[in-house]
Image 1 (cartoon, rainbow, N blue to C red):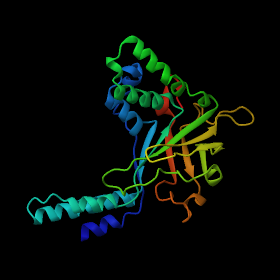
Image 2: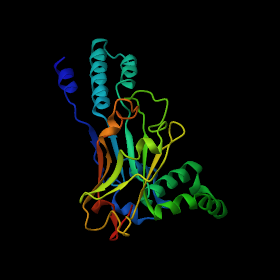
Image 3: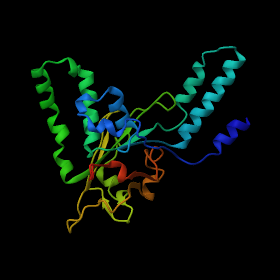
Image 4: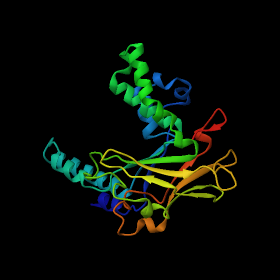
Amino acid sequence: MRIKFSLLMIVLCVVITPTFLFGQKVLDKPYQKWSKDDALNLVMNSPWAVTYQNSLGTIGAEVAQINRNQRDSATEGGNGENGGARARNAGPAPIVVRLHSGNPIRQAIARGRQINAGYDKMDDKQKADFDLSSKAFLDCAICRDYYVISITSMPDSNSQSLDEAIFQRSTLADLKDVITLVNDKGEQRALFQFTAPKKMGESAYFFFARKDASGKSLLSDENKTFKLVFGGDFFRSANPYSGQAPRSVEFKVSQITVKNEIVF
């Protein structure tokens, strides 16, 4: 009981810190040479992708694991199936916030599609056809004028089952005044456009103008960090997604700078 109580008293939110497990050397290789793990690490936990889970989900999973361990000990090797069911209803599912207009994210997604399609075993013509089908996605014409951020629900065995994607029922009017992109000098961009996911497994996309009316970019080598910020009104009780999002998600400019260029 003491362990349960101490866990439940934690009210902070959990952000999984981006790592460099995929290594800068990965970015030096053509994305067509990336391994499955290279691509997965980049889209899940890298300088371009932050995985977040509300602490209620994390705490619930830990409590369920404790219950499962205690029951298994008492029954000398029980399989813990009921505990697993409780864990799935323990709290909000994780989300992944990605800098989609940074080409490493799009390249990692494209590489994942290649691997699933057996690209490495294709002949030259098949590869050329496949590359052509991916060209528009990789080029991302809108990314030239807008910073694009995607947010994806990532349900796992420790989270409640989900019937819909995060922001699936949201509109631009719902989010325009409550989600902003802000640099470390306090300069910000309002949400310009929003594309909602249509079903579970799809991502929500958020678009912010790169330049202000004077032509100044939000990010430069003078900035150290920037954040995607969810304003106070986002967390009103009527918002069905307020429990899945943090107050803000921070990215470090130096970590997304490649060959002296900010890649976002």
